[in-house]
Image (cartoon, rainbow, N blue to C red):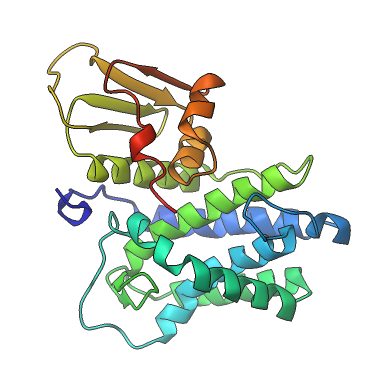
Length: 265
């Protein structure tokens, strides 16, 4: 079964919009306090400084406004569950655009302010079924906004990892949506019912071909916390390391997900 044929979870559009603005605000509040020496620190994204990454967060959100300015595509090309698998092809272009943006906008807080104001205005009367000509493929605004929770949560974690003592909070709805989309993407990539993946309190999915359990505890169970799951799904953490550090519990012969991760390049 392809990701496009997998049933997509429903998300509350109003909560997603609120979550995006809240998480963007969390990042803005933290970035504005960083001195030049911390903005120059390296991140776990090869070749990216903290300044680059902070600029990229605005770019990830500004794409909503920019795509709303473009002509509406004739038809959708991408479902929500297709999106995680379509991002790798654009990585090179995104890295180049990010460095250009960071160099062109030395005042990061002003950049954040413009981005937030424009997004708020653009979303005020934009319907969720409006199609956007996104880089990865045309998709509805409602679906595209869910993908922005992934961008915001993942890069919040990247910033927290890069700057000692930085502790940007995670909006609960943004973290939940990010966790659920990536869990559902795993189920789309490896359909089946032999393994249960639990990411409490946000997601439980069945995946991997094999005997399907019907009652009681399934024979193959993987359990982890939301941030560890997100790091596994996006390649920030290796499966073997997460298991060795007891950040993942995996029981059963079909509970090794190393061959399926990461989901996003």
